[in-house]
Length: 310
Image 1 (cartoon, rainbow, N blue to C red):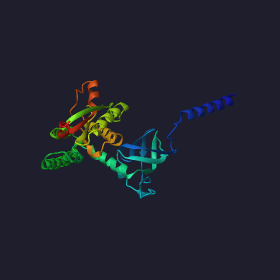
Image 2: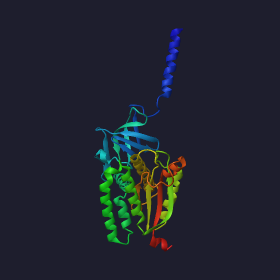
Image 3: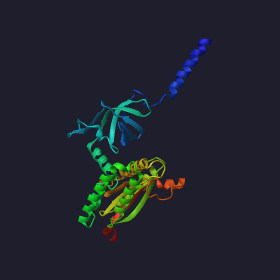
Image 4: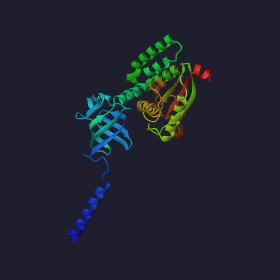
């Protein structure tokens, strides 16, 4: 009788272990999926897919490649440096020790998707060169615009290394960015929209996706003379450097959605970008105030000549 009880107990424990075992991503299981890189930390990629968020780890054995030629049958090997946030990719590998962790054997992507990811990255740095190039098209004084571009590039190079560690420098860069942006007098704001985020979050909800879609449709009704500006912010919770990164991720999410899902041309987006915890919309002393400060401000700007003729 005692042996029989032991046998029954053993069977029950085995069934319980099977019931609580992870349904996906067990160590050694083959995994195949596709998605978009939202964050990179060394050799670890955070990839958002239709099935959830994966941590894709690369190593010296990982094949990183993209198709070449007319048929696309041939594959060209690439450096891990091409794996940047905003890149759409396909990955295959085996499950790692953690849930939804994948040790990648192959990563495939298209050249066009890589080019788009580079555009997103370039457009999200404070006072980025892309901003100057966009606005240069509409500026009435060519010489003054070129001088502003040169000044902006020099300021970026001088402050870029100190921004992450020094809050005072972050504030100064943000203030100068807003000042230069407000001094571009050839445009007027036609529409404004604010996207709000949870604490530490930068993903877009369906509510705000619809709002961005609406302002994009309005912009696309104009044949010329318009741009969309994007600026991300954070509340005062956490360090200044982490809030700088978080505000950039929020702005990046909005820019990516406007480009990839709303059909906004690259040359129509102006991104002062990562403003950190500067210029709060309201006080950070209350939870409701901090909620309003975790935001991305989106503005549809019209050339004065276009707006005046309506």
